[in-house]
Image (cartoon, rainbow, N blue to C red; front, side):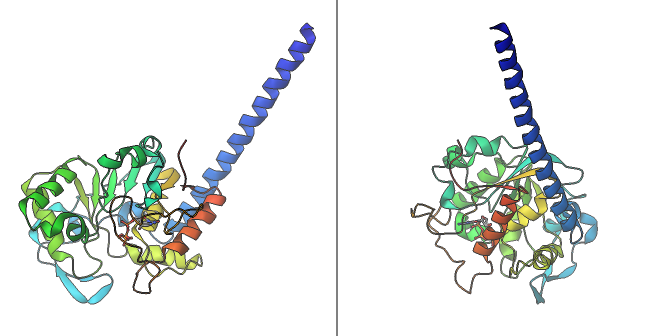
Length: 313
Ligand code: CTP
């Protein structure tokens, strides 16, 4: 009887060892895959450097050409110059696990909030609101992007004091996280960027501003084109994933679902937080989000990243 029990215990322990060993091997292979992609991306851009221009790149009064509209120019103002970081805000920063959170309505009822917040570094897009949606999206924001158009879209173009207060309150919640503003892409948002900069300075907000380098978007597009992904212009979500490969051992994506229905045919909002409609199927859209999604899904299947499109249990 005793020997049967002994054999049974040895058998169980051996099975457990095999299980954990297999898991470990799978995890090592996934890390190798992630590292390989990161290495290849490094041939096109160094996210540590390209994530932001630095103070020494410019002086106030310098005139630069917009990245995607070379005929038009922008003046580097005193406010903008004073908010440029001295060194890259991502210098020497490395994380075991990162979350990149897109803004799809697929996050609603996902209950992913806790899981998202459990990652070492959380990247979010376009100053998306979190508090009211905390159970599904979490609240941790270590790095958050803000297209200049967000001022108009979500903060009434700062037309009245309450819009400005709402904005200042949102930024003050970020503490010393990185606020990433693509200020040099296309003409049209310069006054919004100036207003944002002025509010940050006036209210002495702690947020760490970053303004992507002039070469970043072309380099990211170049990497994906070389890998046979013909994107017109990378979406913020794809840009963030591409940058994250430089800083993160493991990358988990949430809120990526550029489709009006889920796999059960249920309607999915474009954004989890507003009523913006789907635009990316029209030719006018600068992005090819369904193609980007397909690409990310291939990487998910190869174990290079983890794409969550359902509930977090
Ligand atoms: N996203 C997605 N599916 C959606 C909405 C967004 O996969 N239904 C991802 C995209 O990668 C997108 C990111 O989430 O770039 C952030 O969403 P959003 O703020 O809506 O980006 P857009 O303003 O639409 O596009 P961008 O900032 O990239 O110009």
